[in-house]
Length: 191
Ligand code: IMP
Ligand code: MG
Image (tube, protein in one colour):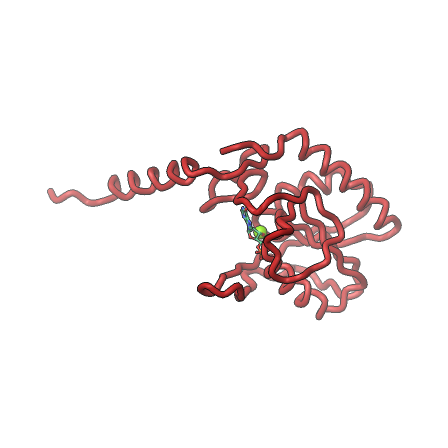
């Protein structure tokens, strides 16, 4: 893997975003909606730097690209625990890629009549966008490369890295190798 954003760069950026969000939501008590699971790391660092009363809720969605077309379907896996009608809602996302997940989520949450709805993302793969979507707070705009770390996973791995790195072939191979070893070990040998 190749480090793209260091721990220090991420910390500085999250602090800066927290200051802006604190200023923009002054006097309000926003509901921060984290999108599971990738955004958990960003969200937890962000809220500890907010100088603002706020609530936290989570939602889980899953998106599937269908075949070669760019259309995808998005499915809700876990809904919010609380009613957001009349509330100032801030969606907190780790990365925006095609924009399909967020355009679905935005529509879904808007139908519940929040007072306002804004979006914060740590990473933005602007060039990969298939659905146009306005993003209020962007940490870093990055190239169209697969990244891991700071919550972002490849096959549920690498979320714990304190930095964001560009995924390379041997990172995938490390996991594939592990899987095939595990499946060999799990195979019953005839007595
Ligand atoms: P979108 O609907 O294409 O915008 O997908 C966004 C979601 O895809 C993110 O919330 C991530 O879960 C996942 N994703 C997109 N790009 C990456 C990446 O480079 N690394 C890890 N996950 C990614
Ligand atoms: Mg995600």
